Length: 220
Image (cartoon, helix red, strand yellow):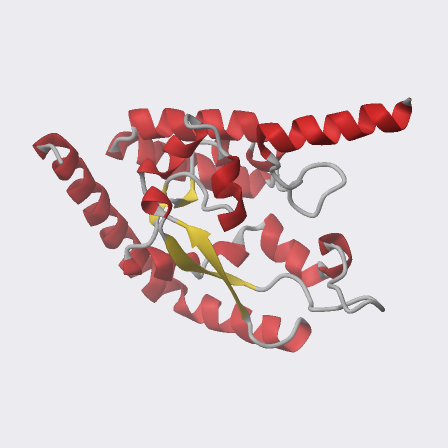
């Protein structure tokens, strides 16, 4: 690793810690209250844990507040996200409060305050080589894609923004993204795609081709 890159990583980590430690201390009463509220209204455990890909695709466990119940249909399978999302869950998502436990991921070093959002493990083999470059940096609580449309833009646009961030990351850019994130949260923009609780599943180029082929065959 070059000296310049090592210095940049050190500055970024130092910024993450100096911003996150006081944030956790100040927000601790809010975290406790939300945790109690989630447990009473949605169920236990209050925290949602899931394995996600981080730096260079290495797995880690992400922490978020639960926003959905575990309701299942007659066949025993979980109901669609939209049917399990509660009113409290919608509020937490609109205000991005469900993301607050990710501050502990930042403290652990699995995530950064700013970076491409950590998606699902099953997406890893669906990326193009260029899209996979989003894993060249630590994932973030917020990112360049989040302040440029979030879930209201296409997956391809999100990944273009992610890769742009990888190539242009700096402390100044991180501070700009954090400021824009606060503004976007207040405006509550781009929270979900139309017809989805958050966003449709990313199928990758091959997945889209198969879906289109099946749709064309159905039309015939």
